[in-house]
Image (cartoon, rainbow, N blue to C red):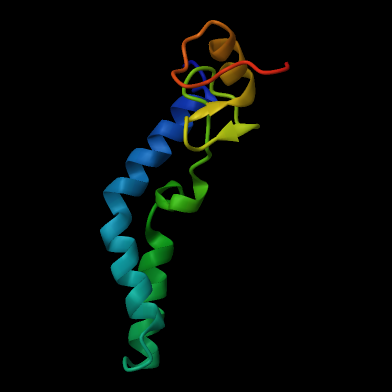
Amino acid sequence: MAKKSAVEKNKARARLAQKYAAKRSALKAMAKDESLSLEERFKARLKLAELPRNSASIRIRNRCEVTGRPRGYYRKLKMSRISLRELGNEGQVPGLVKSSW
C-alpha cells in the first residue's frame, strides 16, 4: 500500500472537516451552554471526542495549490512565494509586475 502524500492527507482532512462541521459546532455549543446540566455538557464533550480527529478544521494546513508547499503561503492567491515568483516572471499572474527582484 502506497503512502499518501501530504497534499492528499490535507485534502482528506478538508473533506472530513466539511462533513462534520455542523455536528462539531452543535456539540461545542452544547458543551459551552451553562443552562444545561453538568452531565449533559460532559456527554457532549465525550461525543465531540468520539468524532474523527481529522474532522477538526484546525488540522487543515494551508498548502500551495501548485506545489503543495506549506511555507510562505499567500492566502489570497493560494500559492507559495516561490510559485508566485515563478509564475510572475512568466507573466501568468494578472496584475503582478516585476519591480526589482
